[in-house]
Image (cartoon, rainbow, N blue to C red; front, top):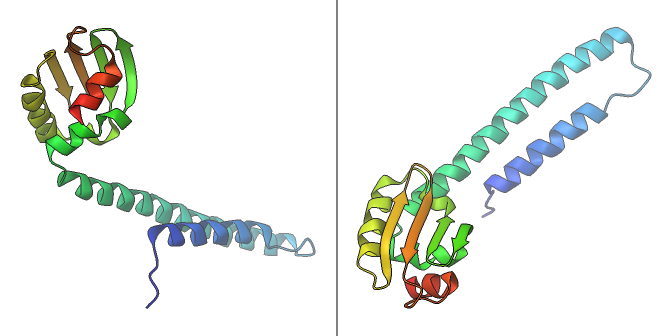
Length: 150
C-alpha cells in the first residue's frame, strides 16, 4: 500500500502551479491567452488554498503531538531552544512548542520552582518564553543549567 504524505501533496500542488503558468505556447491568440490566464489564476488560487490547509494540518499534527509531552520532557529539551538572552544568573529561552500552551507553562513553573539553584522561574505561554534567574555558584554557565534540567 502506498502512503501519501502532506509533503507529497504540497510538492505536487506547487509543481502543478508552476507548469500551469509556463505551459502556454506563444502562438495562442489574445482571447485564448485571457481564458487561459483566468483558468490558470483560478488553479493557482486553489493551489494556494491547499498549501494553507497543508500548513494548518502540519501545525495541528505538531500541536497534537506536543499536547502529550509531559513538562519534565519539555524541560529536558530546553537545551535545544533558541536562547534569547544569556547574562550570568539570568537566562531567557524561547522554545517554539511553548506558545499558547498555558497548562504546560503552569506545570513547568511548578517544576522549575523546585530546582536547586534556580531562584525565580517565569514561564509564559503568551510570549512563548522561559525566564530563569539562577545562582551562578550552583550553575557556572547557562549551558550547565540547561543540561541539569535534562
